[in-house]
Image: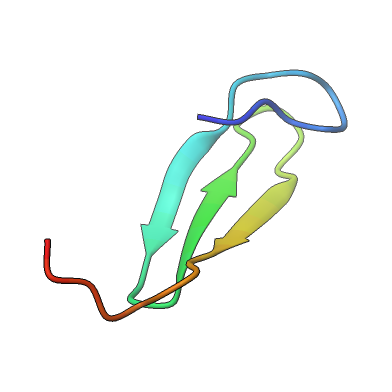
Length: 43
């Protein structure tokens, strides 16, 4: 889990779709979106 760029708190996994993963900070509610390089995987 990434750390919040605003306050340094460990971010929580908020949502995941086929194209992205969204993290949110429980302290300051900063949102961080990580786009997936390829959303068609065979995992």
